[in-house]
Length: 248
Image (cartoon, rainbow, N blue to C red):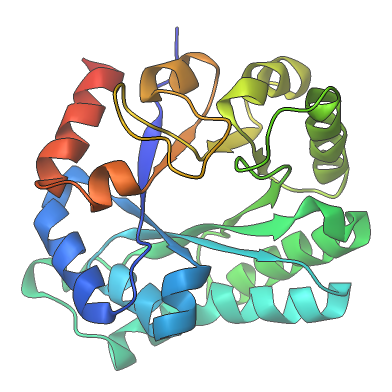
């Protein structure tokens, strides 16, 4: 039986007000939001805390890539953000008893096995200290903006294997490699797929794109969707249409 995929909305905006408007307009149609380098550079950790204060989950996509100690320190800080939510972000009445969490974050696999292992261990250790669920550590394999190459599948599989050895929970990869990753690494290995475009959508700067349904059929657990929802005239309806395509 095909596992249902979950959607993640990429909040690629410049201000907390834009972020707030989007999250409020999407309401209960979306539960997971991606905080990437654009909004994090503009708003900092406040963007993460805001999403958690709304009772939602965060996919922190900063693609950590540095020496192992530096990455481990950054991951500890990211994992601990949830402990500051009640002190620093407004909690709406309906979510007063339901603070969100850091669902997962990204490291770049080209940072090497030692770096990835340090990140995963730091996340789990910090979560244990705080008595919270550890965030998933996922490794970015090859960016979906890169064009097809003769050896791209093997490169993605090699990097996924390195991530698995380092103790990561999964990888970020395009739909085109998802089926092979699923066959190679089994059902418990998490696959996050960006570059998702509903039928008829503009592909933008993405090269390796797929429809939501195709990505789910290929084994992706999480589908990252940005512009088709964020730039839609009615973001909530766009999200609901995508969910309908996925799950019927």
